[in-house]
Length: 156
Image (cartoon, rainbow, N blue to C red):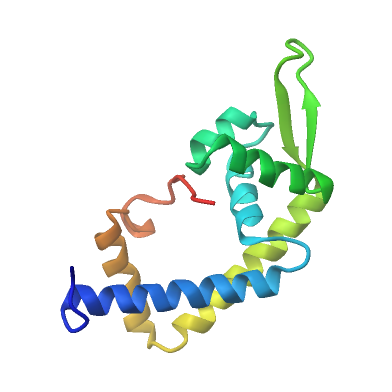
């Protein structure tokens, strides 16, 4: 186990504090229209044009079918998504983002970016770029400059 004074311990302490702050602020500012989990689902759904099935979403969201179903039920209730039966195979349910859902997602993205900008404003421009570079290395994720954006799994 990492001690509080070790590099690992300091990293974990800072990471947990920042994660909690981001989550708390995002949930507060998205409410009551949207939750962070719903924003993550909309992120995934809007990565491609067209409808999704529940099983496709489960694969991308890396969570349980029950959790995805619960989130989708709430999103449908609030008009963020619409479910329709596939015309060729009635067993398949297609899920699409509604106009209201797209508007809520756009608002959520703006809020998330404002919160990130607020956190990053504590650093100089050089240190902001350095932080992104170092985090991308630690996470094993190429930076935009290295390869361009790539879809990744999202945890809800």
